[in-house]
Image (cartoon, rainbow, N blue to C red; front, side):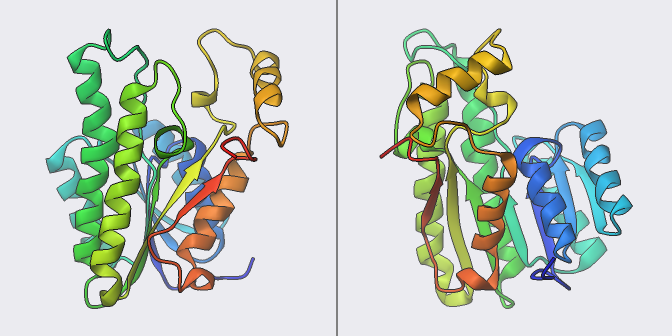
Length: 251
């Protein structure tokens, strides 16, 4: 490992599984002290244990980013333990499926409350924590939203397109303060969200092989590597970009 994030404090939301867990582990392997946020305490503890077993530093803070008080407690914990924040990855997200005309309001509000409002809450707190020092923030959106739409994904697409627009705006607002903010938009990725209801692994892989030019879904680590690069000094002049990791699926 290169130690790109040595002596830095990093936060990852949605760190209990999938892309968020992979990002948290990779940041720790590159030298960062990592704060892990997510709704499931057991999954967070598993991520934390994996990092510590590899010799890394991690702090798990169970957090539902749809809850304003929980987000405030998360950032208070970051300040109390480490006193600063250098890198943040806003990865937490949920999905509710249904045609626009049939989706119930509670489902809509759950998706908006986490994916858009929750991301905004974290982004606002991250900017405040980085002012005067600088830092790097990545929000995780999706190719579903700004780049493409799918039947039944209206709520998810709306929030992910909103996240990308919110990120570009914040990037423009805080670049002069040394805070770099960008988006990574994964396409089909090897996570639970890539499966249709009742679908087997073989069926999922066959479905995506037919529509993704690269012939497969992305490995979680491929998306994580892109996120780490966007957070690193190697991407020091990139501001407000949306890095699409999709195997050509939206070409």
